[in-house]
Image (cartoon, rainbow, N blue to C red; front, side, top):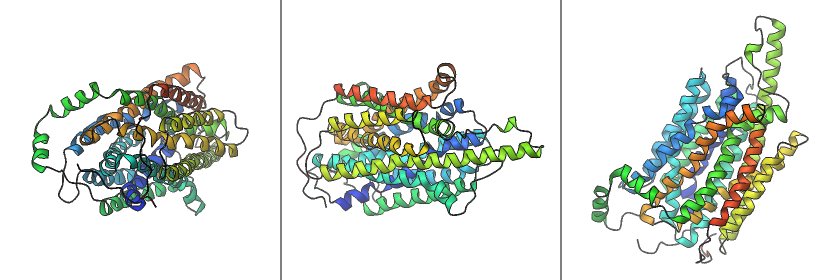
Length: 460
């Protein structure tokens, strides 16, 4: 289309605000799904495999959503917003019902539904930045998305703890998720839908310049499967190089999401999840012992979620600093990403050596530096390498470099813990740290675009 006008801070903020709800969904899923699985009786070394629904869903859904969103134009909702709305409604329903799962298989099934629904909303948000912003504002746009994601991560990660502090019970019987977690997930469902509606009602999209040509292009081509395969095979070299970095980055964070609760509750808090089958509930003494052990685990799990919130808070601060900088002068995105991944790797490695739980604040703060960069710099590096009219499908395909490492981790982390690390879940955090450092080394193959963006003068 013709040259895109610069957008103001509030225009970019509103178009990205739906990410607050998306991140509420992801943070509640990432911080508390393993807790729900363990409450329902899952062994810690089976947790990564129970998580496999999430990346498998993303692998299937995101390229398909990208393909169709490139070919969608609704007279009221536009190109990307129909997918925001459908994904938000389905995600909110799944969030409400998730903590009421009576059995492990149902929780795993609802995780599948939840992740598919979040992916329907999330993928078009990345494409919307490229749709709406000129090249010189794209780094700024992705950094503002990261700022909103950081806010969502911090608040949602603290929700169960905050609800418990307000007097909602944090205890329940064997196989029952505590009321505090149930209420937190319901709040998350409301925030998810409400924040998506803010973006839908405040953001307009550019219509196709030539409607007849747009309609003709929708009917032509290789079909969905052929189009996706073609773009996978012919992806730009820059996209593949950034994807390699993404592979190690997301392997690290999947390991954290699936294993941080068992790793830190047992290694740092000394309060592992009790095995209900090891207690005779008919015996009053043993039943009381289980209640005490389970209470200690639930309290420790609340605190793990709260400490994980610090990576959201840290990423929010880093994104805020980057947004101020990117609003005035160009970023060296590759250098920023390298430094951030190294700091995040050190943060993960430090978790095995903290002398007391309070030190986890520093560990997760370092992890948050990496998280802020992972959510912005790769997309800013990629956006200038692919054509605007194919942005949806390329963003969907790019997310394969996010979900494939998670599938690898879901498959191999459990056996690795059992056979290589004596079933010590803290090894998962060590794997996360090493993986981020490998990702940083892979940046040597990524090029920083020669033509730097002009300074952004309109942000305020």
